[in-house]
Length: 211
Ligand code: C5P
Picture 1 (tube, rainbow, N blue to C red):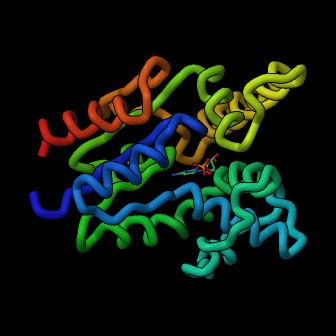
Picture 2: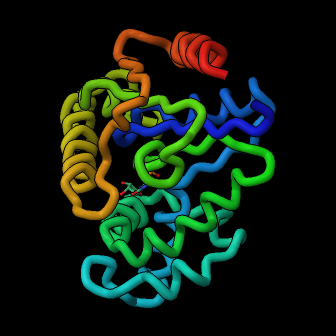
């Protein structure tokens, strides 16, 4: 096929972004981090003094611009919380469907998120579900964000990251609108014992076997 769509879903901090970016490069496809869309809407709500838990983000979602996705404050803890809250809103999700589908319409693409294989591209050419234990994901996130390799607070800090990840996964998996779940026809990659490079090799093998 000439314009394949590859869906990369899974829980928070499983390495979806790293994998999806490398896959896009390997197959010369455009890459979209769909979490950024929800983060940008959440951020705009906070800017506007709106509570993402209660107010509607629909209008902001409809008015989202490419510049909103380039903001440098989309990965802060408050933007992360706001993203997960606005992501529960079906009207917000609906407003973002078009952006995601049209992104891959002409040249295909690799999209990472929570509902790419289940809702956005149910007919994706390849569906990958990337996961790892909460502890592994927390350790990776902790290291990525500059946590120290040793020290008295390491264990406590990793535990805090792990608690926040578990909480966000639970919210994402139990919401009514497009909950996080593995598509029936997705291929699961458990990454606990794999390096990023090994995950990429496995993913490339899967993609090649399907395309
Ligand atoms: O992937 P990332 O951690 O940046 O996503 C932030 C939040 O956005 C997630 O916790 C989830 O609530 C939401 N999200 C979503 N659907 C997607 C991507 C992200 O609901 N496709």
